[in-house]
Length: 276
Image (tube, rainbow, N blue to C red; front, top):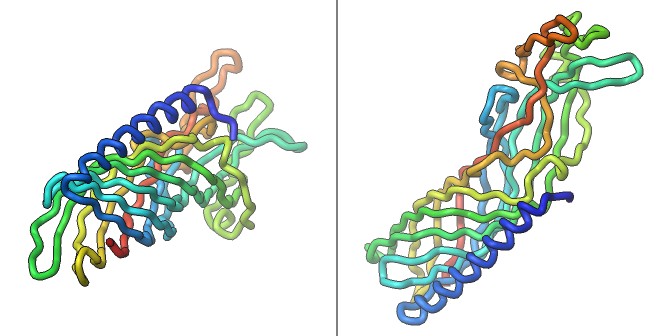
């Protein structure tokens, strides 16, 4: 996957910073102890557009799992980190320019995304004292994710026919035809940014079984902090079905406006695990 040096340098800096924070957490844990665990994390994820040129039209269910490391610096406060591996995505719709042997036209595209990330979370965890074998906690922090897989399936149907000057000569869109169109597999690697910073908010409960072993159930919200798309050209529109035009002095016509897609993904995770 081709990425700019800017992202490589940013990733290198963040990995070094995360390594330093893990080292600090380990030193804090020497005095008060640490908590290790494994979790599985089914999620409901959705696309979150940051402009009107594409629309979220559906959520997706995905799966993840992770290793948990809590460095306790008091009995009720901890630095929560580890490694998460998860899939997310969503179903979006947008308009795009296309050209074939018959000429140029605009097509409506329904895209079902599937992204896979490896993420290092860094959160502050606040815990209650044990209440009847149960400990309740809340957490807040950030995730530093690396995209390792980006693909999807798409359906397309003609939206509008263009004339020789690039103006719209006929609208031919049908939502029924789009829904019934055949799906095709597409790679999104070149159009997805390598690095995904995210905000993490969650709460949950640990139910002690014996000693330090406990069952865990938690709900977490994980949402990207910036657009995940890179070099993804679409046409400016309202709700992905109504084109926005701009006057072009050279042709003397109102023409469709190309823009870069801006959006991110977020997911609600149900976390089930075992802490040791």
